[in-house]
Length: 279
Ligand code: IPE
Ligand code: IPE
Ligand code: MG
Figure (tube, rainbow, N blue to C red):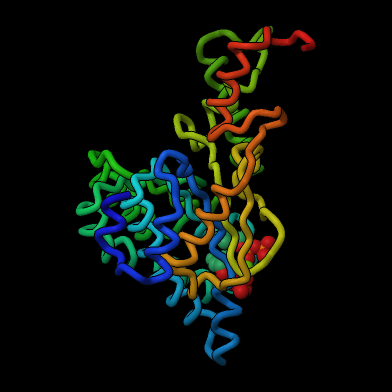
């Protein structure tokens, strides 16, 4: 948090909003559906590719701000499995931009101690983009700060399907297929996000009120924040607005207590109510 203040100018709206934040109640994990690049370009009479290009700067700014806030995880929806339905030229532009981003950002990821990770099925990407992605992941693997997940060729249903198949093949390998019982923990541990906290806050830009096959399992209790701002216009100020709004929410997780994360509240219950017994 201190690191963020060092980059803000006193008296600005960003400074004011950052001052409203309680550092102890920041989300551990923010997920973002970066939407509206095409509409941004259309409004300016530009080709859709120009919107995607303009969408790189907010990625940079949001990533750096989350690192400075000391968050654990940031997941950005960059390309859905359904996005293959778009014209070939647009899809190719996205891979070119991904390669440009990786190359340009590596020093910044290193400087901010950010570890890159990919969720989805990135092996279907064009070979060069896939290779460069793997390289950047390997080069940042030793970083211990923010974990940046890029959701690329990602689908929530596909992730759940992959998790189930991975549970099955593990059990088969161990000779434990007969009588196999799958529980929530097993599914959670076989998702692409295994070992990471669930998103506390899901932001979607450009006003669309849907989740578009994003993190279906993990967002069970995420706070939703939809802004009309188009992704290429999204800046630190917009992120701070979302965080201030997030901290106003009363997160009950089905109970009555206000808690910060699902696991914290579950722990509180464990102390007071015997599991499975009506209170
Ligand atoms: C989001 O912007 C970027 C990707 C899905 C890759 P869109 O390209 O979906 O922009 P709109 O929704 O058409 O404005
Ligand atoms: C969701 O946006 C996917 C990404 C942001 C990568 P879309 O623009 O593809 O979603 P829909 O088609 O509006 O649901
Ligand atoms: Mg869209």
